[in-house]
Amino acid sequence: MIYTLCMALFFIGLYGICCKKNLIKIVLGFIIMDYAVNLFIILIGYRKNGIAPILDKTMDVKKFALSSVDPMPQAMVLTAIVIGLAVTALLVALCVRIYERYGTFDITKIRKLRG
Amino acid sequence: MERCIYLILLPLGGAFIIAALNAVVKSAKLRNIISDILANLVTLAAAGIALASFGIKGSYSVGAWPPPFGINLVADGFSTLMLATVNTIAFCATLYSVNYMDQYTSKRHYYSLFLLMLAGMNGVLLSGDFFNMFVFIEIASISSYALVGFGTEAEELEASFKYMVMGGIASAFMLLAVAMLYSSFGVLNMADIARAIAVSPRATTLKFPLFLFIIAFAIKGAIIPFHAWLPDAHPSAPAPVSAMLSGVLIKTLGIYAMTRIIMNIFAADVTGLAPLGIISIIIGMPLALGQTDIKRLLAYSSISQVGYIVLGLGLGTPLGIFGALFHLINHSIFKSLLFLNSGAVAYRLGTRELNDMGGLNKVMPITGGTSFIASLSIAGIPPFNGFFSKLIIILACVKAGHTGFALWAVAGSILTLSSFMKVQKLAFFGEIAEQHKKIKEAPLLMSVSVVILAVLCIASSFLLLPGLRNITLQPAVDALLAGAEYAKIIK
Image (cartoon, rainbow over all chains, first blue to last red; front, side, top):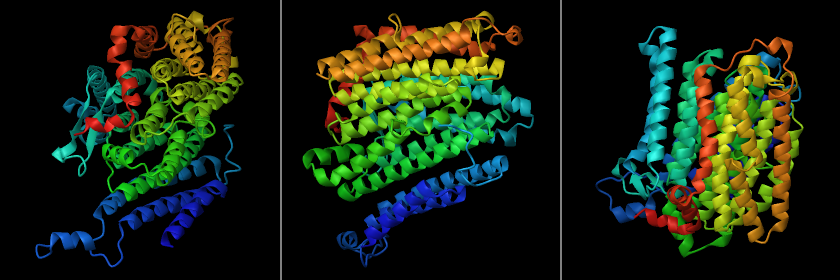
């Protein structure tokens, strides 16, 4: 169920990127898509009623391994969030510069390239 | 193997030092000189290390953490071949930048981003871990997005935004695929995943991540129908960056990552790639022929030349892969050379429009001569390298029983010849316009760098000689053909 919602979020982001005409909305679509992927990674490591992956001296290692959530995806997500931040910052900076040059955020009016 | 890690550390450290120069050196002029020298030293050292690393085969655990827990770097025949190509081109591009980048402000930031991009590419080539590969791909991509928009003119910003959105989608797809692989196998190490796939090929759950990987790398490698960003992004970047993007970036992030994952990790069938290559060849070339902006023409021709590489790889035969890798090296040499030459012309003339040029051979003999060599190479005229690699790919097509593919490849080659004859005729031969008679040859370092590349154009034909072939190209072909044997490098 929750995986389906996560996939839906991903496609909402993709829809935003492909179909919206405003630069800022495209950036927002990008952020939504990025967050859907991050959510997916966290869900992989999630375990219902799991405990935090911190090994205490009083705990039994085997029991700990059976009940804790997987810490690896969490480490991955931290990195992915930082990368997403860098990309978003650069995208927004580009939007500001494009606005300075063209005076609009509408991509149908930003058409100096033929590509 | 230990020295390979400096290929990542040196550019990364160099980028940091150049970016931080502001705090130490007060004079802007001095800062530029220091960053010129430092960037060139770093890329020279990296090229030296990369050229000396042929034949290395092994893995290195970063921070002495053993593979499944820590990050490991892996080198084999394929990655050493790519490393040598990438770092050699990077050295020529930085040498060229010393004069060329004077037209832009903040040269220092340019070098910093350039070295970051180089570090990212070397990281992708050495990475033996999926997530680590993703991080390095992002480092290389983000710095290339910034470099495409470096001039901050309207077109450049627009191209950069377009490139960034496409690249961002590709990265999200790749991250999704990596997450799916992690959920199936519980490890991120490429060798461990390759072993697990070889033991229990759970075909249905693996098809979707493989599909996502192929789309992601096809976008990064600009294979038609995912090419929309390339003809805008490559011409908009400063010339040395275009040379890096067209020459090596699309091959490292696109072709290398794709073939490594399909052939060595999934050990999947590659024959589906050959039609993609053919489509790229036959759509890319007529589009190139119709352009009158010299850099756009070169960008479209990159798409079709990458088509040849994908075609050769997609045949899956030893000869096809050999031809594809040979064409990959050759294309990075002559396409960088052509982009650097187009930059030299734009530097002196201030235009990229072919119809405004003409007779430049008289005033810029070095630029004219080297681009003549490069045009002949890319068109596939006998003594030059492009001829041999295209011939091998076409022969491999015929040998594998795909005569139709061979015919299309020949047709693409003829169109390449005609589009580069057009460049030669309009830009370098014919009558010179009155206002261009006082133009001088490109500055010294720019000329030195293009001459190095022109010599390499001829010299790389000698890679076919058995002695050189056995230490450079053959190990790369063997590494790809070995399939999941790749995992054996890591104990």
